[in-house]
Length: 125
Image (cartoon, one colour):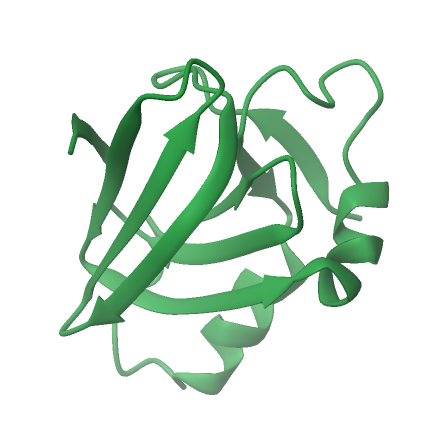
């Protein structure tokens, strides 16, 4: 069963994910926080990602423990089904030991899941 944890290195409340770009093993999430400041999260060495709006993430929201729900917009998922499926699909062609499953939500309707072995970088726009 998946275990959801707050990502403690970056604490941010994302009001709205304005846009998302990905390719060439990098993903960038452009957002507005609850203080109306624009920022971006950059993920490098990305192996896979999923981007969805509300209905595709209803079940994902229900997996977040009530004790941490809403305390941050970035989570790490341990014992992730998504990560396990990815590891099986690559059939040993890339190292998977250090891959982590990040989930980023805004308060409106957007969710992004990212598999990477690097920490995200927070910067202002």
